[in-house]
Amino acid sequence: MASKIKTMEKDGLVYWEIKDHTEMKLKVIEAYSNLWVFILSKYNTITIYDCFAGGGKYFKDSETFLDGSPLIFYKSLIDNSERLRDKTKLVLIEKNKKTFNNLKKSFENEGIIFTKENYGIKGKLIIQLINDNFNIVIEDIIKTDRNKAQLFFIDPFGYSIDFDIFRSIMSLPKVEIIFNFMYSHLIRGFASPHEKLTNQIDRLFDSSDWEKSLLMSAYEKEDYIVNLFRSRCKEISKFVFPYRICDSKSSRTYYYLYHLSNHILAAIKMKESFASKNFGKVEYISINQDQITIMDNKEIQNSEIEEILFRKYINKSISFEDLVADNIDETVYFEKHFRRVLKDLEKKGKITIQRISSKKNGLGNDDLITFKQRE
Ligand SMILES: C[S@@+](CC[C@H](N)C(=O)[O-])C[C@H]1O[C@@H](n2cnc3c(N)ncnc32)[C@H](O)[C@@H]1O
Image (cartoon, rainbow, N blue to C red; front, side, top):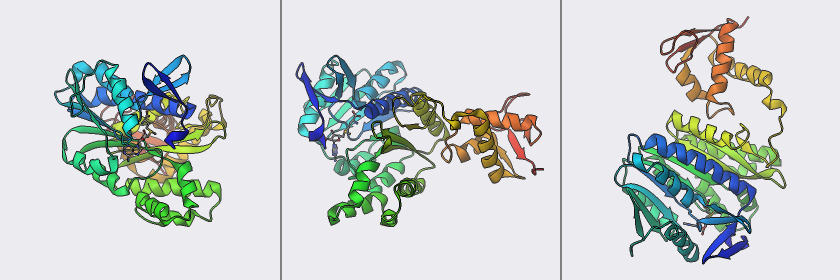
């Protein structure tokens, strides 16, 4: 794969050509990383692991150069440097020697000096570069720093990762994963006659259930596979949301960014970060996706949300926080949508709200919502 990437050399650095879906992915990573560092560094020592780090730099045209994920994480950390605690870490893992050297140089250009063991320091931040195979070094990494707040970005070209790795990572107490699930590569692998590949797919899903999709239509297959992987992830993570990213030329799915977290605020903020770069949507189809569709119609959204909520909670009571937690990764909607619909339903007399943590017209986390019998 890597050999197919167009490159450009400038001032001794190699830049990879950026595609629009990669640019958008990196914008989302930047938005979320800024929030993650800001929020988590208040009460925690933090570590970010960029597990498939890449070479550090991209070019868009002969005059436009962009940072890859390692420098994006680095800049989020530096921008929040007064909040960071001692031993904050950014760990960058890259297997390919040439790509690794390029990555190192892109950090040296930022003024970082590395030791022989590839450690660099900037204020309270330790930058560790590892020229190795993520699948091999990860088990040792997990044993260190168990109590820190940790964010893992897993962004391979393919799908050579075992589900056991996700299981080990999610066993850490304060952890999140953003995983690039390479759907388009995976379905090509489904058709492979090579046992080595199909065994790897078994290990990614930790089962051979994916084979049930082989005779399905393209649409059914995608739905089945995305939900199959999501349901595996739900066994190890409270909140799991797959953000769809298309190849803008064909509008076909290229990959999904899966976000795994155990904290509702993380699920809410990742959704908002993604949507903030995608015209309020939780998928990226093309650079022209700012056109309004029928699904953007408020009335349609409101009636769909009302349906979802009454189906689940008729004759029941639930706090606002639990309602959002129940629905944030099950639907495409945001906290603000649920808030809007609930206030509207209250006005129409379809629900009652017992205000516990908010004033007269607000809607706070502990407020108790009761869904009445429908007439
Ligand atoms: C998609 S690129 C990463 C792009 C980078 N995350 C970014 O957004 O700028 C994947 C990188 O993973 C590296 N890689 C492939 N297999 C690896 C492995 N097993 N362990 C660590 N790095 C690996 C490749 O050499 C490549 O540079």
